[in-house]
Picture 1: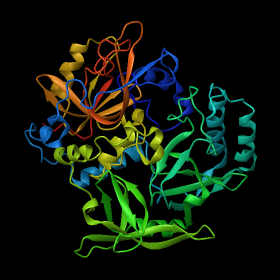
Picture 2: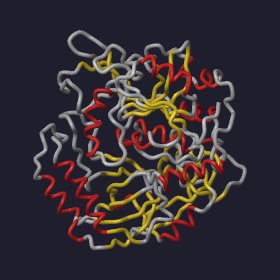
Picture 3: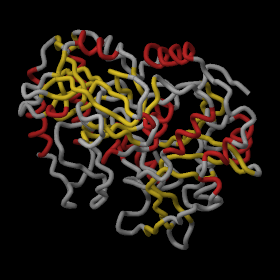
Picture 4: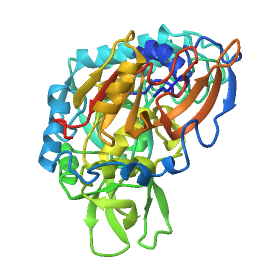
Length: 474
């Protein structure tokens, strides 16, 4: 998640504390805790509605689809997608199969994971919502709540589903910690957000009983107990083996009645909900996991508009990827999935989930999947990177990676490459210090954005090009 300068803060994913170094570099690229200017010294201005070198037509999927030679060519078949996902899960070990999760987890390993995360925060200078620097004594009470000493040699794993949009935290606290005083949109404790129906493995409970430590399909962290419903692993797998629908709008609205008047909640693009009835009508009925008073799973019937979902997945074609990406155009940026939104890596994850591809959660892990078609050193000239993007990147297939940020390549116009991505801000040169132009949404930009600023353009900071495909298909 970053962009030219302030384009987005580094993408959330695995250990956030561990990535403060990325944050610093990224910030310069995106705009957060490590940028050369303090929050008070930076000049923040709104970005223009239509960004530099972007026309109104470029903000439509048809413009880019019309420039593709074979927009409906299948990049990976269903069988190839299954193999692609299996490779991410078993060889790269970047995602997890919750249905096949082991019944017992190593206690020493869990303690190490939790202690490392906590210690990482202890070594950071952070601020509370009141703008005051956090006293390190805070972490003693958090550590007490984590009950690390109670973790034995082996942990019996429990299972369940998220019953609402559930923030996943790196520490068992709802209080935010911020890299800069007043920078409250970027809570360093926020790791991810899980949608309704996300399966999880539950490994630990806080002393106050308010938090579970869970491992999900693509991220781990603490979730409030009231946002999860417990069930056996067999029950979880039984539900997950059912036919499903995939959300193909920016958000799918879930109701409790067929007339769609009793609103329950929302699920984001790419979310899977399991079918109860697929009769031909304007709504579909799905399994809706809810939490009974005793915390156990209680299945209810939920309803969504048919036009918000597809049965199964979309086929993996450049057309579908571009169309799905543009469904999200102009939706707000959300660090770590905060406020029901998404950051750069989650945007990419959601888009590819609509075709059944399960990408890892954070941008650095996403930079390990698929086929490398371009890799650059910091000293490589921009001309070399430009030629590689224009000749090697595949619109609707290739991801472009800078430090802490990821973008979906959509094509080039007159040799100028473009991407759609979730970006917080960019820099433009201006006298003694760069001006930060806040975008704060998913947008189409060219890769020259930020050119002339102190950290350079997106193109200048490009590190790699990855095709989400097992082989290049021209």
